[in-house]
Length: 166
Ligand SMILES: [Zn+2]
Image (cartoon, rainbow, N blue to C red; front, side, top):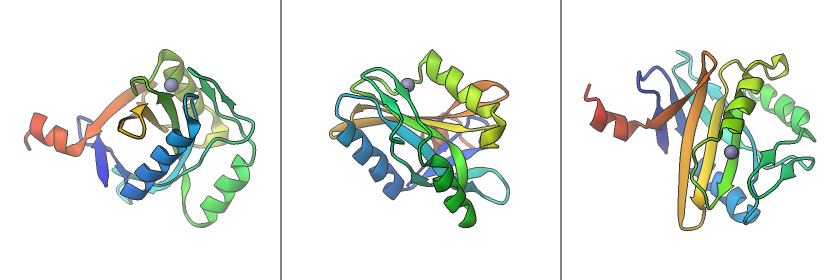
């Protein structure tokens, strides 16, 4: 399990080993094309941690290219509705930059900002996970969250501990 946190420690995003494995499996299967999906999970009562419990693969109407991914919608609403009944919610988006850095592109930032403002998602501060690198041998993960119209990068909590001793 890895917890990624904002520098001010006000938000943590918890990614279990299982969720991490699922992400990597999707990326390995995607080969040299981008892929992605949505993040499902829940917030803690204090709203200071987002626990990602599930990641979906690409809906069948997604557009997957070598250097772009446009997530489709097919089947997604039903999936989110079923999750809702288990008290699990849409938390944001993820996608894969095959054999490239996991840094979100300007277009990625614009897309996640659009999602944050789209009432249909009911998620004003969506999380964006980008997986980059070689998924089999050296996957990289970047986690960000939309805060006041900017994508804020989170870092693994053990790195923050080194940077900013409590
Ligand atoms: Zn991207």
